[in-house]
Image 1 (cartoon, rainbow, N blue to C red):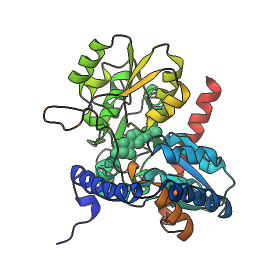
Image 2: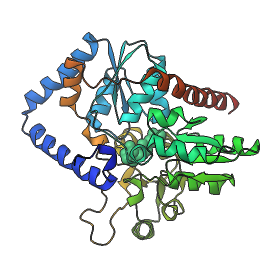
Image 3: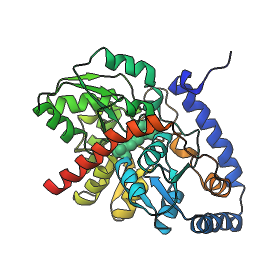
Length: 357
Ligand code: 13P
Ligand code: SF4
């Protein structure tokens, strides 16, 4: 009997994704420097001739991040990616990230062609929150406001009252709680638990998790901190509470990058996906950045903080989708229109928050 992708467990999916990446890495490594430069130039030319813009997340390979910047696209967190795609005039948006990021771009810009670099690039949070089961869960608690993290499918967003990203989660939940609203939070239980502890809001948690962030280990992080008292610790709130407890700053990807530039310290230990280190090093070249340890007993690497789905995005795939226009994001119009409501609400809320600050 064959199984659909969503029926496979996230760790198994992670292994499948890693095998696919290593096969591609072998093919990529066999390219000569000249062939590689030609491929890069081809991507630049195609972006121009196709009237396309590249929108990349901080977690993708540094090569794609640089290409996005060089071609006047953007490298950003998931909220900024959504805003950038919406505001840009290009007819085609190419998303280098994971599936939900492509879907969000399409939900906001239905008239544009939205392509994803690799349509198999998933996210364990999205996979761990199937729309039907989630909808039934919400139906059991009709008195609660449904708040879902951006890392969810279009169908799950269509069932929500609000979509949030980690950059506005605390503010929004505080505001909803002040208005007396009780909340369902999905899918990330660690982020939801963090928001609950910080705001005291009445939150019912969906039990999803990120397979990358939940691997960070507090005991080895504490050990590293003791050996480097000069270091500051930056933590994404998808990490376990014991890791969050050790943080100097807890925040979204863009908030952590900002902190890495603002804080006066020579060394930063970073508990989020390692692709972010590229941007941090660019922004503060005199400081040192190391990935927080994921190594528990029996681990084969000290920090394996890489998202296998983000790493599916590569130069060859980018060229392929620009040539063929494959991997286009297509959504059911009823679902899209319904999902646009809580996302637009989030963008409006984020805009008002900036004005208030
Ligand atoms: P941000 O919303 O902070 O960009 O995070 C997205 C993500 O996938 C975190 O793992
Ligand atoms: Fe999803 Fe985690 Fe990868 Fe982010 S790092 S895309 S939350 S699996």
